[in-house]
Length: 482
Image (cartoon, rainbow, N blue to C red; front, side, top):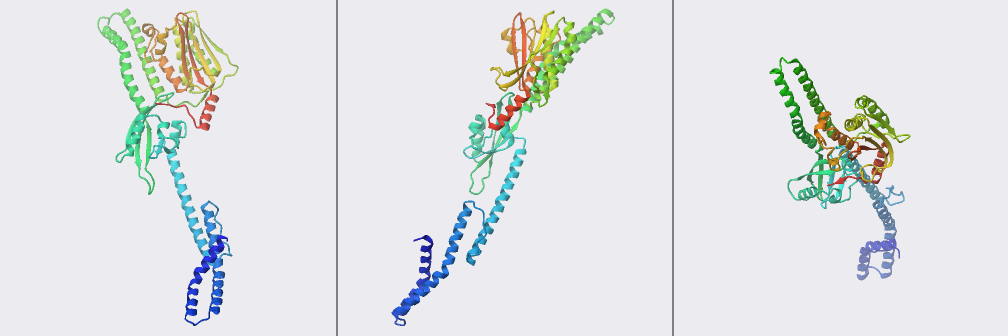
């Protein structure tokens, strides 16, 4: 027996029960014969069945209709053949469904607007659940992590114990928590994180908002101020003392001695020039360090830039009895992503050093070539598409134990000779920071008595763009975390 038939029989029985009781009472009292009573009951039951059947079938159709809506089917208008009461019920359900759909669309629009606002914020944001899993994040957080962290635990996204401790603390009732940490990468970056509890919606669970604010520039500026004062005071003390001594001499015993005055003024001019170069290099280094975390985006034709650098330094090479040569080992060099002025400063410093410390009568060679693959030791470079520029001199060379310190500020292998040649001790530090900003690498090779080779590796523009596209497509980055 089918379910609709069972429902019809059950409804008819329930409706006919009062009639059966009345007819049974009349038969028992002798007011009605049993046969007419039975016929009357059957007629009434049949009529009740005929009357209730369409309504029951309409209710069954309405039930199936609601089941379809629950499964996501599109709302259909009720059939004109349904009973009026069922049509009214279906219409009421349709109105409720349309209002619910409108509310859902309004809520979705508000969520989309909120997502747009969050993505527009410059500071990275993470929303965590009670188990410290990432529920939501904004675009700045994805860029910082070079990945989409949603659905992952915080401990696998950022392996920073201080952050985990702050999140655990924020789960407890009371104030939020703060944590300071650093991310190691091509350039070390400093952050302060603030974790706050979000009030849960009715029936919802507790969530945490973790906001990151980058302090790299502030810390760099603070460190640079301290370094500037310490280094400048140290490096300027000697030329200032020399100037003061000669000024006192010129104002005193040598005031009427013309030959001594001319000699002293020449020395004072030399010391003043040295101080001027030192201040210029310090300011240049500070400016570069402030922008080091922001990679340049211009396309630079490296060979043309090198030709300009070498042409500008040819008079200096001739004055020092040195030959300056440019050798290109590629038919067509790719462009690199870079800042033309900064790259020119890099190669000017390297070539100038080679001319200073190379022996007279020798050659300084500048070689530029395209490498299909970056050297294994330079893992920070893209695996393919690298341009290498090597500056080679034939000087005295540098001891191996001194090479790692060459890019430190004010470090000199031969301090006396460096000062005599007009060096400030900042040239290679400037080179290192510019190369770091360009996401490149500096390699130094040297052998005592044979000279040195300073090689700058820079990613080709198309290789860098391809690498960024691969990171974006795969959702995996190369951020090293501490």
